[in-house]
Length: 490
Image: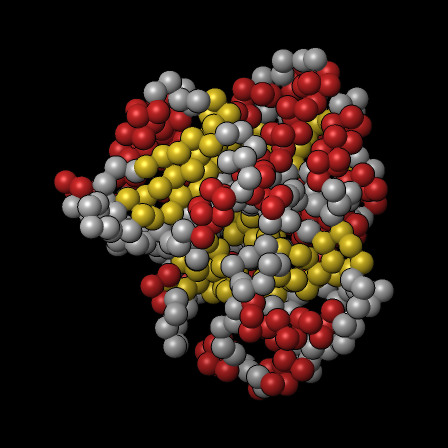
């Protein structure tokens, strides 16, 4: 197998994006969606953007429901038999994202192979493939409306459809990996994989830590390196790894490589391809066409989007994609910033609807993750998870941010933790700093230390325990905060 460095994959990313869009529009021109928006007559990006409106999930949900009932040629020109179930910011409990054969082959699996090749370029003496890769994924179910249509967490869909080489290097067996009941699944994963030669881990940090702690209990060991001495790579995505790195370093007990990826239900978008990169390389040749909308444009009747040529470093953009799965100018809900141009590198800064801007402070998840990490380091604390929301003005008090934090290790001094959290937010967010000036708009954050297991209890109460489900970090409303307070035993 010839190993290509990622720098060679996209020498001309803007040209690659034009080719991707042309392929997408040509392939779908005779679908119902393509006929509605005259795809056969769209020859330029300007015409594409003029004819096709930006879609959120509720806009395309009727099409997707028809596809889940077995109708074909709706959003994409080949049969779609799989749907990735994803929690999102739509009005529904779950979103169902179409996964075509093309999106599996040309996006998810192509990106995975490219990453593996590049990993060996970066670490030519790696023994990664001499052992097993432990994937902590979700579950899948058969759609009862049509026996041919199946859905599940993205990780489950990928495992169910992975090529032979993917089955060969993965642990545990598929029947265990796809178990529905999460707590039973964690126990079986721990019992089975504790005896394997695991060289890599993949999964959301919270659930991965839970599994690793159980494995240490079973084996009676102090660190994971004592259980899996050949472990060399942890692949993470879905949430920022910044608040978790210290915990992983400690529990693993030895040097390994960390790789952050952005593999959403809607597509494999980017990955950190070199240990020294600031940000993840945007995949421009993997079946996804990108547009970038300044977050200030969200909610406008005719929002303006830009392409790669016009993006700038450090600006907060909402990501809009068109894909081989049949998503068209789809507002994915994530916000990103560019850290490097050509090749284009990005970081995920949060969710379009997960932020706090109750007083003009423009607080995003990237800010809160960095502040939590800084406060933890300065007070010897370890944070399992957190969420925050505003407290609005009252007769006796001005506003504040209220934080619910679950510690794995309590800070030496909670008051100092709060001070450091606030101080870091002021240092990295000038809007927050201005609102905190002399407590005029915002007073010092209010922090509640939750018992361990509180967030797990809330997720269980919502039917979202395990898989890709996660606690919303920030909210401009207090609903999540109040629900967590109300859960029994919190």
